[in-house]
Image (tube, rainbow, N blue to C red; front, side, top):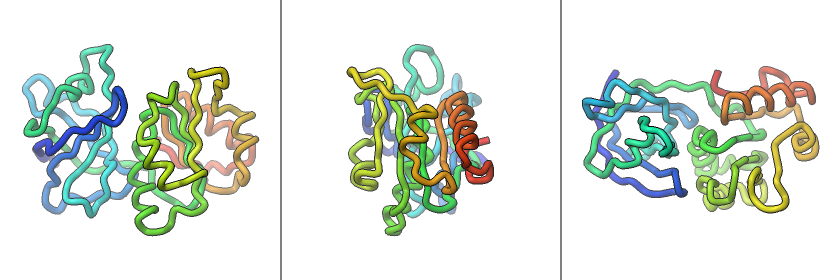
Length: 218
């Protein structure tokens, strides 16, 4: 399946992340946490598909993607960064393995937060956000995507970890997890750089989490 959709609006989120709101094809459906492959509808880029997660909810009249642009090389996200309302994207079938499986701990690194955005929005809308907790790691406070919304949704259960700012640099390592995780029998939702996901998954299992309780894109 391939659909051409127009960009409706582009909104800055951080210094290198934007919300892209686009037309929603009739009958197009997805679940929070799912993604699609996206290409720019230009001759140079239309065969260069990249996976992006929906950050809108299924009932919204439009689709939303929240995308970090890597401006240090001439790739798809760098070109996306220059698109305006009226420009076109190509979207494909829906896919994705990050699905909500009950209250638990969400662990994200940088742009890895994106699969969790729609999940949190849906849980908040349905009054089912209780007993979920977020640990969100970024280099600096300027890199935190949608901090205000996460604080509104999760309150004091939204934790922001900064690895390259100030005197108190933190990392989501074994000591951090064993200090902050109160119940290793709950589900864990993990998304970020591949190495981070691998290391955290191993630490969680060493600490008593069951492999089937770890939810991440395989």
